[in-house]
Amino acid sequence: MSEQAQVDIRRERINSLFGLKVVALAIVFGWHLGVFTRPDLGARMVEFFFACSGVLEAMRHFGTYSYTLEETYENFKRRLAKIYPVHLLTFVLAVILGQLGVTAWVFSRNKVAGVLSLFMLQVWDARTMFAFNGVSWFLCDLLICYAFTPFMSYVVQRARGKGDGWQRVWRLLTLTIALRVAIDIAVGHGAVAIAVHTFPPVILLDYFMAYVCGCLLLGWCEGRGPVRLGRPVQTAIEVTRFSSTHGSST
Image (tube, rainbow, N blue to C red; front, side, top):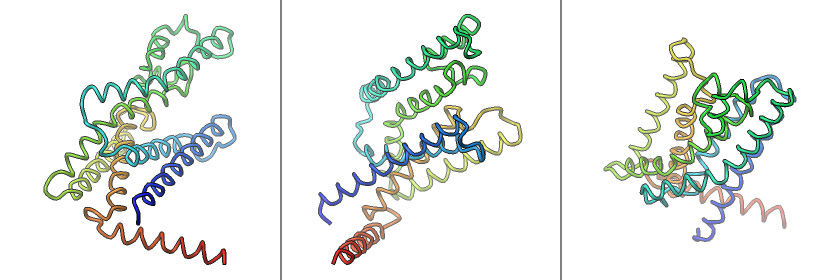
């Protein structure tokens, strides 16, 4: 398969992931409007959105970071410039609605929550997590995930650079999944009082698992590591697709 064909395939996959993220956001929006009430599609689609984001960032940027402090800062600043204006606009609108008596979040009675919301810190406290614009926690978590992406890439690169390569990445994924399951068990038994679908460290862990899966997927497609059948399988799939497409057109 030519290099250009590989680029085209990766672009199609990236576009597909973007499309899935849009679908997830649409379902979340519909859930908040009351279109969907059962099951709890709102929380599930948020988790799905972050999973798609992790895989997408791996496919777009894995191996391209230089892992410097300056690069990390520039990455954070670029993401903040895109996300914060949306957050600020919705926060101001929420304050206005509170002053008009439309919502219960009046700034004069919730100054601490207001300041935390202004600086995108409200998500760290369960009492202020849904203050003013109730869904702004989503933007806060998303910004944190994007800010840590270069470091995640560094961790995976370091793991892959050892003697057994991708095997260490698989073990890293296994340990991460085990940690995530332990958190769910702790929350389920009341040992930890957090909202697992909104609390930043948990969201970051979910995002990291998806990012590692994206890196492993790249290795699979290139036929490297513990999944060396990746390239033959991918080639067979593309040949089958080509044959079926041209067979139906004749």
